Image (cartoon, rainbow, N blue to C red; front, top):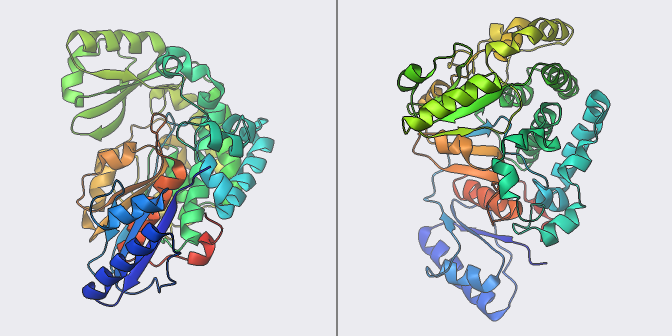
Length: 428
């Protein structure tokens, strides 16, 4: 199986970097191994390719691979983005699981703990085939074969094991936390964190608010509580809340998330949400049913607030060592909020002010955001001018997870982040 490779090199001057680029391209074209070069000089260049010839052509300016170069600047504010649920799929991150021992160790540790919390083998749900077989058979090299398009768009998709709340939330937490730990151990230290829905729990754990074993126990308990609630539905709408309001005749449908000036998420019981979807479609307002069986961030979550608060009172909570904005307020979370069990309890039934949370990043100089989860949903919502990187493909993509992650690392390194290259020695 052909796997992607990261070629990274540096020099002390722009002229020396061009000479290094020419030398590497010639070596790749002639089959010679790249010379050992120092990787920590100020002027840097990187390319990811599965074919050395493609890498050579790209370095010369006429190949298919993106080349990342630096201007010698070093300061970057790195922001980790953690998503909610809905975009997960079987085989997710299988390439990283196979080739990055740190990721495999962190994910296994989480999944073993979660099995005792929710009574489900999440490893079997995530990797119904062995990761090696998924890598060879999947169209994207990191996914479990071609996706079932009908199932993905079918309203019953939320009943599939990987989309059931009891499974989806712990799985989202475990995968993203393992990615965060992996990137941190690779030398990528975040200045700030942003989480969406259950992603804010990952941010809190990465920031030191809650210890990993407590977070896993809590997220498993939270998922079980929600799983026992009446079914609900969620609807993503390409319009702001004011434009949507006339079509919400059913008071049971409420705003669950404000993701941008023209993107709102609604939640409520399945029947009223379906009627709202029909009214919006008749008005030619685009909307899409989300793959979830519950109405998160709506009043339908209120019955589990008190048991969740009680569980949180038994867990030590600490002020965040890394700042992150609150879904509830849209501004930087305070120490008092982060350590208040009542905050995390009402977080579940309160609308997500994600657009405001992203705006809070505006004070960071030269930010680069990294989405530590599948697809590009959150980086697509980010409005800053800096690099917007991601780590895993969406379910429809042909690029592999390893290729996308290596490209993110190459871009980070070219932007001035020093990587722990020893952690990558087992890569192909």
